[in-house]
Image (cartoon, rainbow, N blue to C red; front, side, top):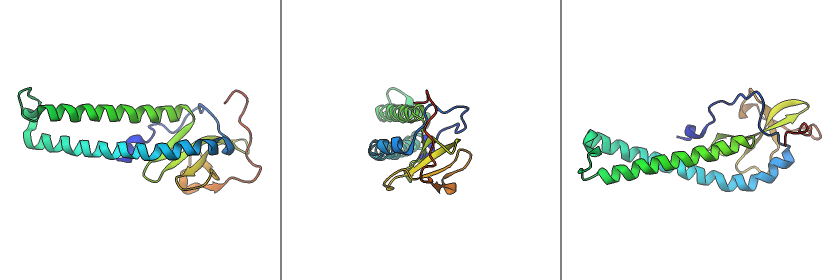
Length: 161
């Protein structure tokens, strides 16, 4: 279910914003608060999906008839599905616009576009970690995480903030 919030295209020609670890660390409090809310929405989407599936399996297309006993329930569930999906897409889109990639909601894995030794990388943070202290190549994954070398981080190029 968490895959619903995964970015569709992780390869970008140019990231929207480049982060330093220091700047990313200032964003962690907001992310630590946001991730459980997103997870709650995803869990609720799963529940709504199961209820819609149950209605469909039991009643078939009859449930869509205006005079059907469960028609209002079906409409409420459809509306909730659309609302939750829209809200999730908006939040993920906003994060992506900020140069933040939500990689794994279940584990709270978040990547920030950054630069280490003149190479475009993902600065990597996972829920529960006290700070952004790791990075991995853009083409890699969290399994490729390495500690950010002391003093190795380059400032973002002018105009990227």
